[in-house]
Amino acid sequence: MPLYRDDAIVLRTHKLGEADRIVTLLTRNHGKVRAVAKGVRRTSSRLGARVEPFMLADIQFYEGRNLDIISQVETREPYARRIAEDYGMYTAATAMVETADKLVDHEKEPAYQQYRLLHGALGALSRREHAAGLMLDSFLLRSLAIAGYAPSFDECAVCGAPGPHRAFAIAEGGAVCEACRPPGAAAPAPETFALLSALLMGDWAVADASEERHRRDAAGLIAAYAQYHLERKVRSLGLVDRSRSDAPDQTGPSVGRK
Image (tube, rainbow, N blue to C red; front, side):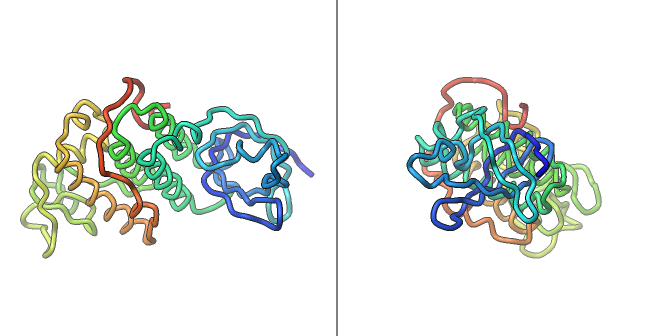
């Protein structure tokens, strides 16, 4: 059977038989891959902890007829161990990997930009560079932009009229002017619009200085925008713990700059 190696982030796993797991991964060069990790549910397995969600590993695969088979795993970054220490970080990471899984539809098609963004986001999250909720919201906006659903926060998403604008319409693609504003459009505060733009652009000085109420408003708009354009529910978004805004432990590269 043909062999190949690739760096991969574990997105999810589920049981197969008595001792195996099917592992869904986002790889650097091969896009999304589903593979069988044999025997990983046995207590004697060396692979089990290395193929948990959020882990970044160097993996050797055998190509199979339906599913590939994982034959070797070397941990590159133990993101899962650090993220699992904090419930807020864990729920944010869960939403990140579920979103990446849904955005990368087809297996074995290169998705390097999505891989790079997820790698950077999980790394920043594990290092607690910013509040977990902000890092998740930045990831959602930027992953949607890579997929072709970039929202507009400055110009009118319908006619292109320069802003600032006071209305936000999810179906229209973001900020809208008064002439293009549909019934039922949201009316975020100017500070919320500024935060949304900062999260999309990676302007962490603005994002970190934002107030809690504007973070909550931005998070609601981002979640609604993501689920509308994905055309399916991201179940883990409803479980994200936004009860506190942790101060970062250190400064460093922002989300997606790996």
